[in-house]
Length: 110
Image: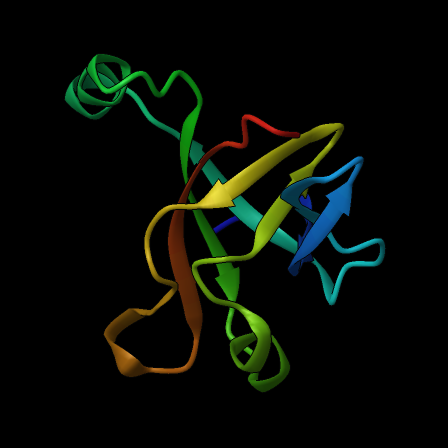
């Protein structure tokens, strides 16, 4: 398994600007890690496109206590200059504490 893509894991924070509430990523990531990034293809990509999702991926990272304490479905992921949001709860694969897997889609606000 090759972990060759660098990503940054951020908490999502509430912001209020000019009377408008919204969310944005935290300024600093709680972790920067190497991952296996697999873009959607085939039927998965077609189904995502039908739902209006044009940038979908499955992400796998190495398991760690500190990441599992902070990572949840509200976190934002930065890859290069693009932002993604987690759309599935992070899963400890086979409950073995070796890898965490989750799906992301392009974050519209990012």
